[in-house]
Length: 216
Image: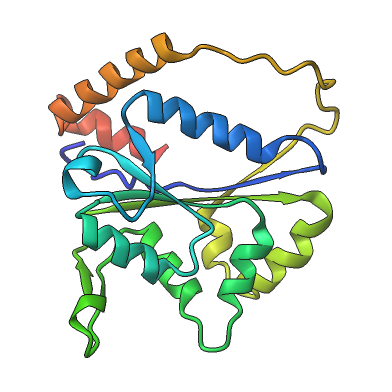
């Protein structure tokens, strides 16, 4: 919106009992957006023309800096870091002298991020507000509290930025898996996304009503 830039970053944690198909749900959602021409999985052969207008999914990346470096190489501005298991993220974050926690907080706000070292090919720079990096992780109820305490510690930074999605106490009974053809729906999603991109900024006709709404 013209008077209030919107941060489109989402940090999502899926928490449920074992064998509840958390990872499969994420994979299916990603597949839907791949069909909508809005995303693709990272691979070394990607070129700038491949990622233009798309989000790139990185599976269990070793570090946020690695993601930023790869994004810089292919000129991507949007990506999703996906951890099939929360323990993979925690293991990377708890390495001695790791800067993952602080970088994640900066990523969420789309703040200025960069790396300047002697090896020129390892340098990158992202100006504030020019990129969006989301994060998704999966965890079981039993592992979540123990692992999350190691990652977030006493800081409220990550806690206040995460959206935790616990499974229902009484999940629906498991049924036979059926392949769903979602190509038609994905095409409609692609059209809606293109419309939003073409509009770019949405005008606010009455700034006074806007201010009153934001107070509430």
